[in-house]
Amino acid sequence: MTTSLLGALLGLAVGAIVFFTVEERAGIAVFCGITALAFLLTALSPAPILWGLLAAEIAVLAWTGWQIYDEARSVLAALSTTEGPVAAADAGSLAAAQEDLDAAAAETSFRLDLHEDEVTAVLQDALGENETPLRRITVDIVDGPTPTEGTIAFDAEFKSGDYEASGVLGVSLAGGVVEVEVRSMDLGSLRLPGFARGAMGDYVDQLLESVEEVNDLLAEAEVDVQAITIGGDRLVVTGVQRGGPEITATALLTDLAGAAAAVGPVGDPPAEVLGPGRVNDTFAEGAVYYLALGDSLAANVGAPSPKDGYVSRVHRRLEDRDGRSYGLLNLGVPGETSGSLLSGGQLDEALAFLADNRVAYITVDVGANDLLGHLTSPECSADLGAAACRERLDAALAAYEENLPELFSSLRRAAPQATIVFLKAYNPFSLGTGIAFEKDTSRTLDRLNDLAENAAVAAGVLVADGFTPMEGKAAWTTLMLDSPPDIHPNALGHDVLGQAVVAALE
Image (cartoon, rainbow, N blue to C red; front, side, top):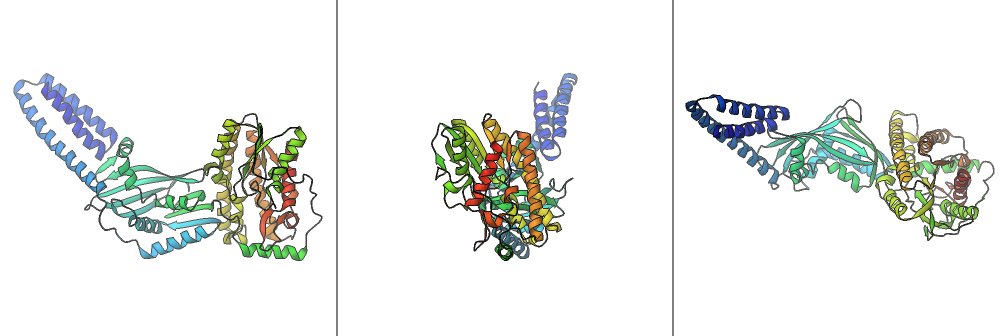
């Protein structure tokens, strides 16, 4: 019996070594094989042979135990040693990366294109600013079957001697937030299976602290990432700034405003129909509510006061039409994108409110900030057909197409009886000048609005056409002719947008 039990322990020890150094299934097979052999030999062998077998088992078990102990001691020492020098980042690559990061942070929209050497330099520089056990890290960007399915392989050297680690990271997007997943990890000669990586907990988090530095930088900058491309030795991140100014290309806006001023307002101004609302705030008590979500349009930007915004105007018309009083909650956030609306808190606040209150109407406007910053980027302001511009726009539209169904389904689940209206985006550059940029941007906004309409119809959401009545009327309905020019609607523009919402409801 002793021989059988020692054989099982030996099988467990040897199997564990194979499990963690070769392959998981092979380790299990070795354990089962040695254990079965030990029981078989115990049952069939005479006593003298069993004594010899017992001695051999003890010797091998002692050797394997020492190997496991020695490796575990080395791993723990490597992971727990945070003091010591850090290798210097490549100065040229770090400077190039920092220049790209600074440029991205200064723009409303960005396309950050980093070579793997630049990613390595950023992470290596971060090692010196954090207490990690790593002395050096090197990144290798690996192509995947598609541009969005590449991976980031890394090799790392610990501060405690020559002990090394390697692994593969997967990078994905969830509502505009970058998520880093450990696909595989080896510590020295140990290959960590999934459950072992989870069991190591804080050690793995500490090891990856610098690898996640890129994601931390994006989060601190309040960036809504719209697309990530990994391949060709490059990491390309496309996105927009959350809560920032919608447009930063002041020179372009000034040129457009100058052209419009030279032509003068085209045609007659639209008629103001709804008039100001009764609620000069973003909240009013009520037994039943109208809930508004969105970006700067819902947030009354451009309107002289909250009662002049389209939300308050629609609220008044609903009360007059239905012959009853409605409460109002306007959650609009300037600069909001479809991604930041999902993950930045506005949707969560709306869902919490819907859980505790009766809501009859919900309006949503979002999408302009997903796109407009790209339209005025250097790659697009000269030619919307340029390859670099198309890459930006396609990434933004793909993210928008993915985000809206999630938004609509979340609202519909939370408020199955409410009437939900989505307001299409208008083109603030449609000033009636007839220039190519004006026409091209209108076609691009059409693509955005088509995606929104398809998602809305599929979710049973009404669609308000805020695009058509503003087309060619931006000189009348926006602040584009002000100095400095502003893409937001004035009081008349808010009334026109309110009319579109009311028309959808009626």
